[in-house]
Image 1: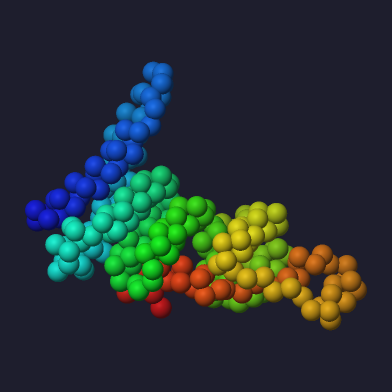
Image 2: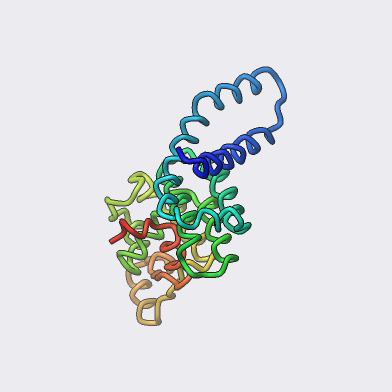
Length: 224
């Protein structure tokens, strides 16, 4: 391992240790539990995280000296590392690793990049998958899920949970990643005839911000 790579991994490890060190320890059970987590789960996740970012950031080898002076990138390293360590899902940690790499590639404002990293942390994995489904399968995807017709949706048990899907959809709408298309008068007449709730007939579409977010968290080299 090169000296520069060791320095980078040390910085990531220091970020992790700082985060764990900030946890208040009170009582013998919590003390023992934190110790076990550090030795088992935390070290395993940390090793996986370092491997994820090593694979991606090795492509930026020529820019390491510049990165060492980049305060924005250092902030991104801290944000993605601490957030990745809080996630129990490897797939979500992959999104954080993609975001860290793309923070040096995609030309959008630094403020928007920070917001996107924060959104990865905010959303449960199923919300990100819902957004991806909307982007690929179009405006009828939410209605299909609410009617229990989307057997490919992950996790499968959520496909029939109307309240949960509606809550996730509203979260995406509030963050301006998805826009809501209200039914027209003709559609409302059809709803009345079939006694269907208005919200079940509402359609959804991606916003430009939503497309930017998905691009930011995607592995650009392996995406279709």
